[in-house]
Image: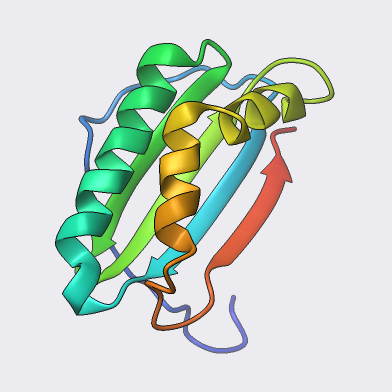
Length: 124
């Protein structure tokens, strides 16, 4: 049992559910809280990033995201990358891709209401 009740929050995803076998991967879970006035630009940039990741990066296994059902403009991401060094090769390729540069340009404009929360882990 938990020492206190768990915090449960759901979000609306951008993909259909699918069964994916467990595989060695470098993973990220990310929380981004976006200023309401940049929401539409954020959505365009992140849709472009997802499309580039899933369509042009062979080492990108998953790039899924959605918006909190409880807190508007709070977005959650789950990404998985494969390749050498326990999948970090795939993440490095992602970080050097043209669509990621567009994201970096957007992120440099101070679009957040709080600092992003990024958790990195590897599958075991």
